[in-house]
Length: 505
Image 1: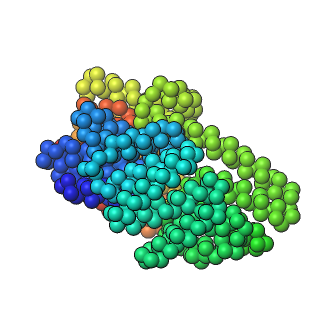
Image 2 (image 1 turned 60 degrees about the horizontal axis):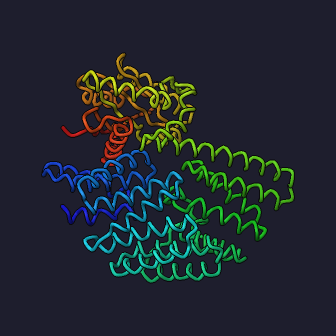
Image 3 (image 1 turned 90 degrees about the horizontal axis):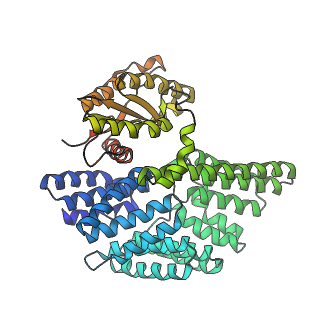
């Protein structure tokens, strides 16, 4: 089992979702053996996956829990790995100094029992943290050390990412010519090993070309993306950035119609994938494109809109980061930062269900009361399977009807002693008081599956995936319960959807 965990620990780096199911199975096996350290290692792999796919609260809460366990039990390997995960967590919420501190600790805790691949990944993480802090020389040194270890381990995927990051570093440091030299090495390395460059790597090369005035060459570098009629199948990383670089390169060549078409594709990608920061950057490019056409009044108003969107996005990100920090660490400072959320309305405008603000305000005291009187409480996180297809196949209006009708089913399932809430999009929460909660969640899943959805739209069928957990000793906070339920929900979706995954007995 240790060997399987060793092999699985770095899978999330290159293909996150592939690692989750095997990690859940290894956690089960470790629990049956009573091997708590191996169980924690398997959970940490799951936390790594959750962080890489954007579930930062669930990931951060679990990583923090494992970090405390590792410190108490003096488990050096788990301590090093959990610090690496905490570095990634803080990076995700924009806390660069904290990210650097944990990345440094993750490297300090490395020893010879760690595989060269794992040590290379930790050094790579420290290099990224140093780079974000503007410490370019120390970052170069860590990248080079990581590359030597990855070369010894024959890890081609990691070596390509390290090499690409070095090129990215030189670009950030203002050394565009040096960045392009390394970019050519990236391309040669990929060709030598028959690897396909992703959007991020292509954008690194193209951006360096753009910065030194090679606009046609930059466009040519990004041609595989521009010629791709199925961008929805591409990974998100680097995709919007690559499209924006292509827009700028086309604009500088005077290909204004092409640039506009590329920009619209970029905006669509940002909208579909929720890339707020990249969308704002694309709005700035739209203003520059209008100016290139000589429509300066339009460009002026678009530039104003860009700045307004940028200010709004920064405020939204600060608020979201504050909420995430509060959920994971529950600090007084974070609670103060998030206090204004609780002053807003407590119901979802579309469905009439309670909203996330209500959950944040009312779930913690409810948990405290249930702990005090010893009565059972459970909750289920619910995600509508393939909801995007409902909107795409029928209409967004139909999608809204589905959400409204599902809300009524959830309210019925919660009953008078619990409540249902819409957390956002197609994700819902049901809080259940009393016994047999998991049986109620399974009944709810079947009820949704067998419901007559044709009343909403002909031939419409709907299923849900559910992750359930219960209040118990050792897992008593909102963050802990939601994090565990989110982990189970992801397991249900990974196992094929239309399923329920709950705490083991």
